[in-house]
Amino acid sequence: MKGVMWKMVCLALVCGAGMVGCAGDVDDPSDVGAIEDSGGDAGGDVAPDADGADADDADISDAGDTDDADVSDADESDAEEPDADETPSGDGTSCEQAIDMTGGGVLEAQSTAGAPENQDADGEGCPSGRISGPELIYVVNPTETTAYRVRVEPNEVSFDPMIYVRSGCETSVCLDGTVFNGPGSVETLDFEAPGGVPSYIIVDGELLSEGSFRLEVTIEE
Image (cartoon, rainbow, N blue to C red; front, side, top):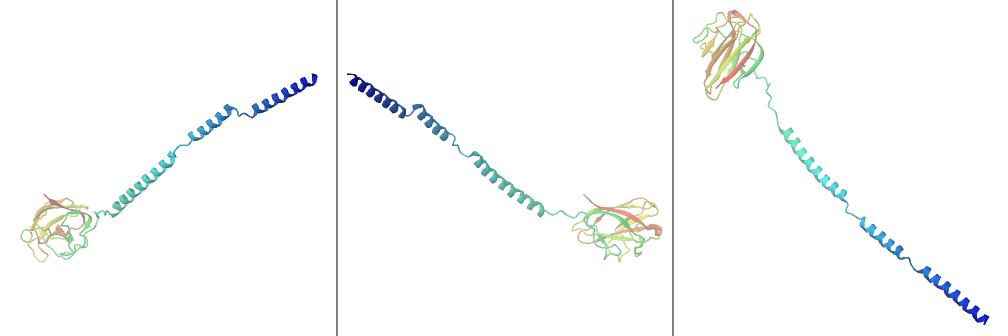
């Protein structure tokens, strides 16, 4: 009887040990869930690369700005500014070398000192200046009849300027002229130049006077 009992006890122990071993092999459901959750989290972290898209857009925009800047720079470089300070040709010593003032303008530091003494202002229509000095000659040659104003401002109190206009250096007739003011004073002459032919403006000096002056020629409306 004792032998049978021991066999039953041993069998129970063996079976109990087997159940414990079997239970230990079963996977923990919470572990399984954690693995699945981990996989889900990994999947959820995947997102489109927004920074990459922004970089592409920025590159395209920058390229467009560069093109616009290049076009603007090219336009600015092609534009040419007129040379407002260009000095007219000629030295004013004769009608052939007359300084062209057809478009008007201002000439500083002009001077009759040392210039030729080939013109006199004692002909018909001239200002009848007494014993004229050396002169400088300017010319206007408009395409149509144009009204001009000539202003001579002496830079020296000893210079007594006179102004007269002729159709050429070979004639003694004046189209117009003035010598009203005294030494160091401004002289102004208004006249109409016919279209298609030159009119020569002569700045001379009364009583053999000579000196520097500022010349201004304007077109009157």
